[in-house]
Image 1 (spheres, rainbow over the protein chains, first blue to last red):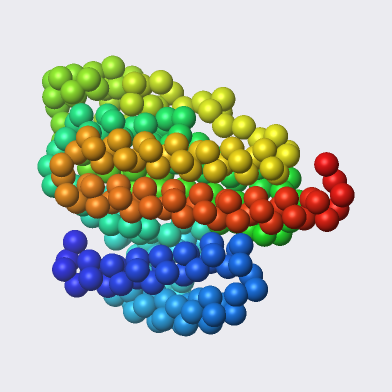
Image 2: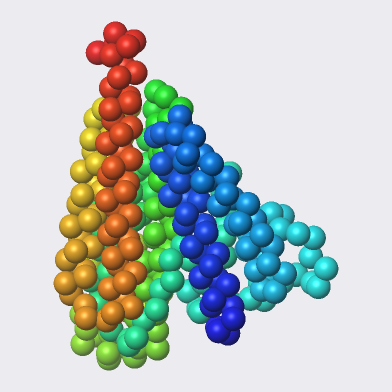
Length: 84
Length: 190
């Protein structure tokens, strides 16, 4: 895997982890407004990071949860997570 | 409905092929306290949980367990990649090769196949959540044993991440248990 891809993937993993962790916390603390604010900030940054990654390295999600594919069916072109 | 995201939750880097470690890691792939057991247990229990907090937490933690199952699979796959049948045999994986070739298979470290008998659902939220809290502690202990069994720094890093997730899930289930007990007492339901 290219160094640049490793770096942006790592950023994406960090942001997704922050969102996941806040999501689990909010499941049992839905009244916590500070956590909700932090969650919303992470979601905004995550959306940007996801668009940035997908433009360069293809779709992250299957079943249409990506931007329209202009350059062909990239989903099966990129290596799988256990291969990189 | 579920979606697949084409990335790991946490990076898996493997320094060297290590067939013995791959064999040990199988316990978290298809063993009693492994990630498959946790995912199936939580995603199956959620339907009869009494509150939305409980349904949401079981859905979300159950989904994260599937991501951990993929991390364990990736570790095993990378640790075994390119091994010859003779090397597999010397590492105690000869019977695995005989039955499954190079494929992964959800069995424990001794080759015993995964079974739904490892998990339970009682339709009783207090019993189920206590069971889940115990499950998280058993998985934490297992990860500590696995960390003790390798000196590969990259592998240990990923195993430490997975260990930490068990601690967080235990915490969330404990909060959920308090919440569910409060709800049931308010309903005067015993």
